[in-house]
Amino acid sequence: MVTMNSKKILLANNEELLVRTLDTNDSELHVDFSNKIYDESAYLFQVDTSKNTIEKSSAIINRFKDAPRNFAIGAFIEQELAGLIYIWEVSTIKLYNKNCDLGISVRKSHRGKGIAKALMLEAEDQAKASDYKRLQFSVVSTNEPAIQLYKKLGYSEEGLRKSSIFFNDEYLDELFMGKIIS
Image (cartoon, rainbow, N blue to C red; front, side, top):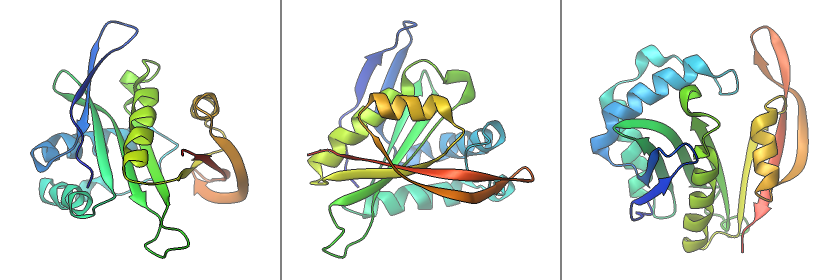
């Protein structure tokens, strides 16, 4: 996992955001974040949060730490994990090894503060430092606030997988986005 130096960012509302690589000392915060984010968001793929444990969280963090080009970055306000972004290598096959996928989430109580933007920009910096050329991800096509942010940051729509997600008794479209970063 790429280890970054901690960065302090002053948000528009004058709150201080600390952005840094997660480590196993964050496992309890990671479990709490995961449990809450899945309850708050219709845009994340739902999982059974009753099975989240500190041990499983530590294992997830360690899997990122053990992979040389993967990373997990947390955004902290005071002692709360307010946002999280994961970056992982798409494939070790040479044809695709300059591509990376990302997954991002921000707690509902902290949305609209600039945390997602800060995490996306940090992910781009770390991806460039890890010799990635392209970032890619998917987003539920009805998540307009996220899509608008991604477009502002230079990401392009690359495709639409119709009715690929079944959530709350309805089918949703999945929008694929990407950006060349170097």
